[in-house]
Image (tube, rainbow, N blue to C red):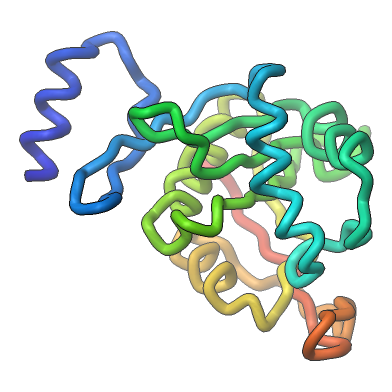
Length: 194
């Protein structure tokens, strides 16, 4: 079914290169399209990132970060922000891409990803990770680095490793988890195929 769906999609939309992945929702195979952020997306993105930031389990942002500050760090600071949506227009997730450091370190990029809670575990983060690497190369980056991957976020660690990222350092007790206390964080890195 996967192959025939992709062939049909390519026949209907021959010039569309935003097809990244497919996932099942309520028994139906749905397309995941990833595109650049547009201003009207923000309320729907905020609805996805807000509970993640409030939980304080994966990002270092203050758990009470105001919406305008979240907009600044997720939309204005990065070089680019993207949304993953299904064929009905439902935003499934979002990610940003930015230089990890200024100047002499600006050839290495950094990304942050958040997936809508109801669609976690369905390939959305994986699709965004693949897409972000391609976009990073297009934007001239040579490598990608995740600066603070919470060690007990085992699903994320496993996913990034599946996509070729190595743990290149462990930061002992670098993250203050709201339930587990001080936990280690990883620096993960991948040289991109340019």
